[in-house]
Image (cartoon, rainbow, N blue to C red; front, side, top):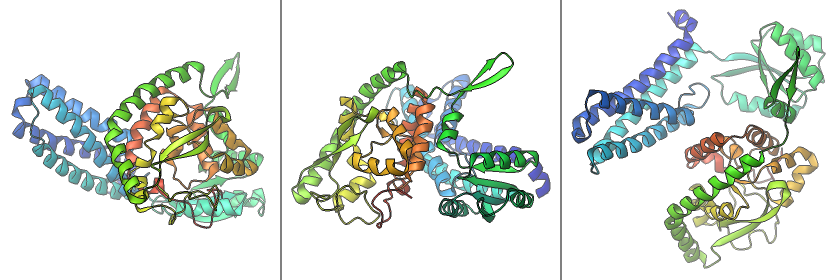
Length: 451
């Protein structure tokens, strides 16, 4: 039976996901029909409302990666699905109240939403279990050119032991190409990390001919070329990389959106900003705001504003140092506002002024950026776009993500920019607000997030 399911495993997984959506929708419908009769339509109107619930659940579920079973950890799948259910039900409550022309009692919907989340939890566990039954971990060979980066990659992939089983690691500089090819034949796929491009091409060609799966850690050049356009010149295919960052039209429209959205966000956030300011002042009587020099578009320097989360003059002795995992400079109030991201709210003023954008690469300190440039000159490529309050690297990376990985993620954003991508990243920001990993500090024995 398992062999039969394995043969049609994509269909099986799609069916399980559909069942989860149907179960959540059924719970909502049952509650709606039973407890919110003033908002009922005729038959066709009811179908339309059910369709809007399913559409929003799938939309937010897709945005938050709630259906990426097997790719993300179970805890993140459950969190994403719960967040999708919460937002969908909130919008539906407003929609039902609008239809009924009165603010309905939200208690029934809250209870229904909790039951939906429990159903989602059970469904996610079942889907996750089924996925790893149908997709057993692949036995892989890791090929790398540098021991440190290779072993770090292996350690990361071993954390997802249900998906990857790295059987052996080999340094390309200590083995011949022929012996590596013989090793490749023994495994289902390879992971390629930081090796010479010529050797990479040869290994890639060999794996392609043998139908071996390839996992490639991209270089900066790989990232740039992945966003290129294809041009047909007669019977010759040409790849064109524009390498220009955002166009003037995109920057203009982005600025208009920044002004409108940051103004609205300042109005909504003003009560939280007032409470935060009072808490900081009452704790030690020090300054409420903290300003720090950062870099933005084309290397321009500006002062970023934040609520002070550390003791006064925290860097008077140590100089420019990133916060560590157990930094004793952070105050008790600071720990709370950092965890809730309240310390970032004054940066909305930077966005309104034009120093920053809502979405873009995180603004780096000039002193720390100079350290990065010594070993990674390409880090300056991030300055091809205005610094952002949130961004690709902030969402998909962590506070302690290496500069090289931050650069690659920021380049994906800059070279693949669109207004839709900005809105998507803004929505995804809500997902990471309470995820501990994204605020995790660097190791205490490091000054920066370098390797």
